[in-house]
Image (tube, rainbow, N blue to C red; front, side):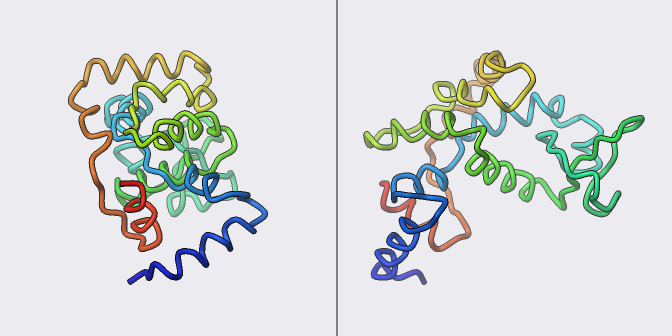
Length: 181
């Protein structure tokens, strides 16, 4: 069990980290990604989970790997290409990795800022509203958010899950998430 008195100590260590300067900066990087965004991205990137990589590698987001990966162990290759995509054990691992990627990679700083603003005001996060922050995810650029919004509009039930309480298998994250409520 994670004790609250260690949370203050953890806050101070995080604030002193070279990667994060404030507690708010840290919270921006450990927040949940709305379900509507995760589902819309998976739908788009894997042709509704029917792509070869979705079926063979559980790779529903088109995440690439380094050319040095072990083919058919850590990654799978695209036919007629040097492109290699990450091989995941299951969809849960894929989604965990995608959330981690969106929370950490420099290219999604705007996405994290848009997600943090309603949180800072005590409001829920709307995947439809923050999807434009993912403009660096795809060669579509700023159109990528519009494409995700179109997918969300066609699958309106996904949005209702954007602010549901979730169990995260990480004691520190559970304390952080519980502090937001």
